[in-house]
Image (cartoon, rainbow, N blue to C red; front, side, top):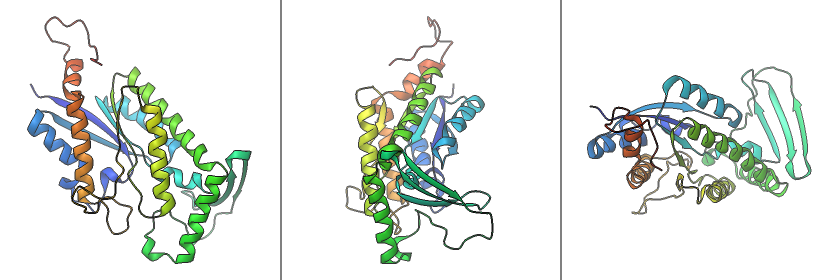
Length: 280
């Protein structure tokens, strides 16, 4: 009998990074190790979320469709970067530009939609390479993050993320699904983006701590040999970074006997079994 486990991966570009060969992606490394050392065949389904409000419904839909045994949820700082700024501008799918000024601590928000027109050339992106930015642009962006932190936008953004995470935790418990949460990776790209990653880790870890859940600290800029875990843009994780994340997840699965627990849950024909129960 094949020991097959379905895992739903919920993340951003990390699980589907195009500048990494498929076999070097962390989930493929994990799949190979689980099959080789534990005899588990991992069946992987990936959904991507870029905006927090869209995430939960996408997970519910995927659960209804694929019935996963595990969910691997990646906490990401990227969806929070715009929310954390004092001043933020973005374009929707119709190329309509919106500008926002937000100060959460005094419950102030100014929002203006601009008429749809030609696509603007100054579209802002939090993921651009630092090498392509002027020093002035970099300083202004950091000041924007700093002012947003002062007026409480970072704390407000974290609270939104925590609400999502609580929904996912409840959903997994009610659906008898094992949940693995990976914390945010570092963001050496800029000072404040890296600062947000560290703060998000501490914020979520303080909530998770003591609840018997699997949460992995993924912060770090270099491996044990001092080699960088990131490409030159200091945003995207390189092959060493993927290998490290795969090892962290694999170790957690082994230490928690997660594969064995899942097999017990799924084996309804086990002699003497009276239904399916999680061995928590």
